[in-house]
Amino acid sequence: MQQRLYPSRITVYLPDGRIAGYIAASSWKRTIHGSRHILRRPIPSIAVCEQTYRRYRPYFTELAFRDCETGRIYAISAAVFERRAFPIDRGRGRQLACPLRFWATYDPHAPQEQLSLFGGEL
Image 1 (spheres, rainbow, N blue to C red):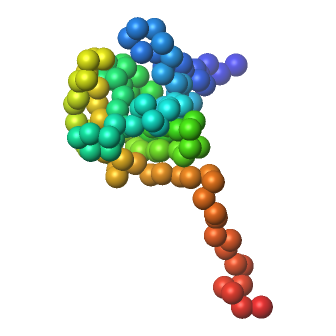
Image 2 (image 1 turned 30 degrees about the vertical axis):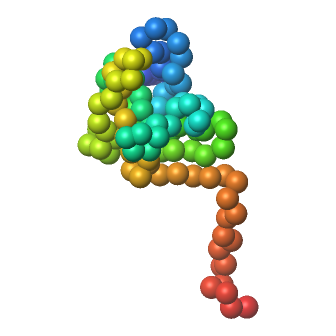
């Protein structure tokens, strides 16, 4: 029997013990409430607890957060997040915030364009 180096799923905890998602397939997955968790100022951004980010960073290479209010999924590589994030503290501890323009956004409710196998000719 082969032993795994890492468990298949890691629960991510904030410093106060609350759960902040999980890591699976080297992706930190989390459900957010966009109206509360997406910053409006100084620039629209998504922020994460810096201490939690640094603690779990060896276990993920991307972040994928789902907004439970809209169904949108926001995804970004950890490398881009680290290059573009800025520190912010609004009384709940130090956080790293990355502007939304650097996140890929997937909206499952948006109409999907159907691809044609024949390039539009029949």
